[in-house]
Length: 289
Figure (tube, rainbow, N blue to C red):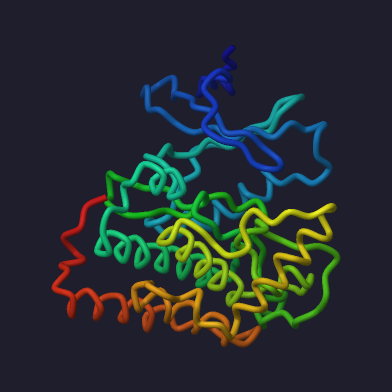
């Protein structure tokens, strides 16, 4: 089954790329250039919040920087909202599954590119709120990693461009495996929480497991509480950091010490990665994805 969007793109409903809590992503094609694209679809009747329209707004802000994932087109009809995006190679979760991260050099290169992506977003006054391997994609053309999926993203600045204050919220934000303890406790999130989620993501990508995976519980609430209990236990337990490259251990330790409104030192983290590679005789700038 196919659908033509505004006489510009064709959407292939039989070629699903992925899905999330509020939308599905399909392969598509530009009718004028034959470029293969990714088309994110949100059914209007299935959700009250207009997540895709919010995501469109974030992508419009990101157009200010050429090193970010690109939105190509946005449209709506009586049934769906459509967000047309550049199509990239694969996300980091699948990249890991296919054993593409075969050495520490490539892993540290990917880590460096991820930090650059998060810095770009934060420098624009936005936090992601759902950092995880599946929300980073490999851009083979430019030999880098791009951050995607901004449906939960939010500004951390108020109308006066001052940092918002810390307070309780009505819900958690993010994916259970990677969300910060602050999100579990339903606190407003900030830049530090993106870095905490990043550290969990990196540990998972390197070790292929986290201590709070596969928790059995009788209810969703009990499961969230059990996961939080284990995450809290590991805040001051170095066992989680065993056999990790030193820069990843540093990112973890650094992120959990950040204050709510503190600006992370992205360049410091990048310098640590570069120094580690230099000491290990890894030419990080020659690595190809």
